Image (cartoon, rainbow, N blue to C red; front, side, top):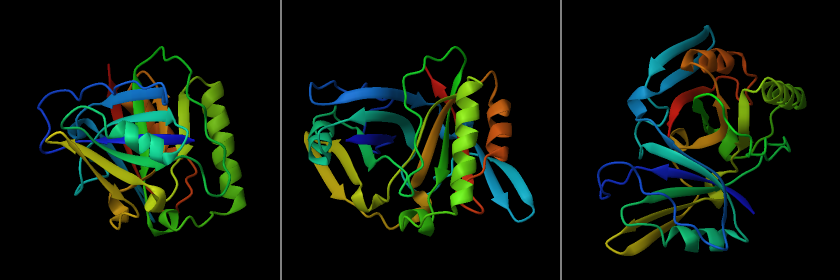
Length: 227
């Protein structure tokens, strides 16, 4: 099964960069990226009158997003067991990948030759309920993804299934705390991601503004990847 791991800041964790994920024979890590601080993010808010840019993350009230990983595991239980063995002070949100309406993701694996950026779109009530957007919009999303891959911009992308099948894992005081979804704070959840490469964050923001999202009025974040 394919999962996305959203690494989160943990108040009880150590200061400094997050420790690397500990490998396991049962889990394949397809992609892993640490993120610049939330203050380096650009938030693009779509309104009925167009878009506006703001500084900071789309996740303003919950734990800060510090990194992302795409993994393969035999089951959700195997993935949770693996996360429970990660270093002290780490915290994660485990989400199944895939679009409930059937839009194919972009497989990770392409090597980057330029700076990388993570684009995430905030969840809403429709994405949490897995309501399908119009078929024409899905088709345009697929076409835009294909174009971005051909142009050398898009490295990986996928939707995230509802948090009803998600799990949060934090490791503190030598023990793992596991909380099953759903998570009620929809506005503090991620509904999908795109890992892109570009010379500047401005190029990514321009691409984000033109993207045909599943939501009518999405809120999107662009954050530099570090390392």
